Length: 592
Image 1: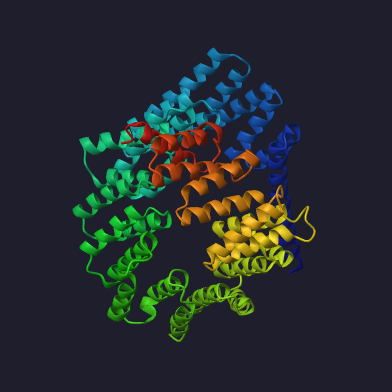
Image 2: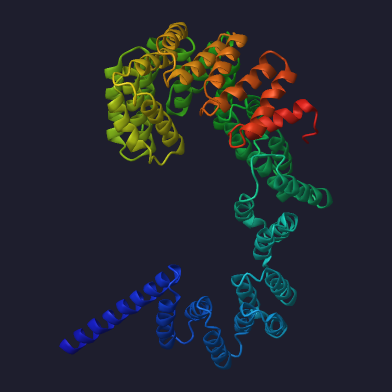
């Protein structure tokens, strides 16, 4: 028994030591210590003579040290013992190429290619080895030869990737389309590869080439795959209207599900493209008998009405109509919450909104639904100035759903409420935790608020200017816009030259836009630009001036100057793509 235990112990130790050697060899190779890596790989290969990975790394270690004779010897030895492993010919050829003996190298490359005719099953390894040696033209030749000899083989993904590496986008896109034409179930996979090249800019070269390739196939051989890819492309470009045309065509052919159109409408709504969102949800209402689809679409359409025309007299009656038709139950929870938001932030009736949400809390809810309603109630308490009560609700949500994104959202609201109250240190302590939030939006919001506090407290020990700004920020949230305007105007006078000046000017401009005082808004944006042309808010200000001239003052000629400014002077701006689209549209370019 003791002997058996000793043997097991020795075996375990040998396995552990072997694994350590392997890890150490890779570590030396990555660190560029090729002599050490070669020494270990030599020993590993002796114990595992047929391990190609060890052989490959040993060859590369020799080559990196310019020990070409050693590399030749180990390759030829393995060729003698493994006659069917024709991909080793490539390593031998590459070894000669590294010594600038191109003609010798070519002989071995051609031998490897020729071997595919006799043994197509080796074709993939031959092509893959060419790729590993960055011999892309030979790799293409090998993949194509293998597919020619074996009609069941499909290496179009590998071929497309090589075309991408070579920068031949047109051939790459067409090869991906060849693949998906034969493997329609792998459309999602192909989208992931295409996504590395497609941008949100419809005028980008890759986007134009891809659209052209899909349209040619769509015209010569109409099928759902091409509509799906065009819809996907337009979604990447935020051309939701064009994407809807493709999804309608798909639905007409196969009336199975309206989910893609619903999802498109939701994305368009969140992107503030209310025109496209309205078309999506209206289409669903006209073509679906599902009560869930009907309710969700009606709610989105009602929210679009609130956004476009908040004073519309039909809004209240529409809410009552939905609640009467579908009931005040868990199935209409979204309706009740949107209604509460409308009552609070549009109708300025927070007490009535609180009653709506308190009733919702009395329903049979899961913990996530309860948390979401409590967050909305806490927001209303902030709106009405009941900060401590709001903090209690936020804290309850955070403690009940630890590490969940809803809890992170609650923590951000705790930080924001503390910021509103002027307690900047406590706000920062919460924001630091949120920098690593799993939600990109929460993480970005936390970074922005933390940066605002940092930038404007460093040289102001009593934080007077920031307290004025945070007070104005709170008043904006509470829909007390005139009071906010007054405080911001005072701030600019009392703290001229302070680092908070740019934020104050930006917020003043936004408030003036809401009041439809567009010329005054432009004045504030222009002052911000004059203060510091390198300021983080400058491109926002330039773009917003362009929007005012285009959409509010109906002066496209003047608007184009600001969009052009973004294009040429702010190439890293998040508004670059939209500015280019608007600039080209004003100029009369064909954007189809």
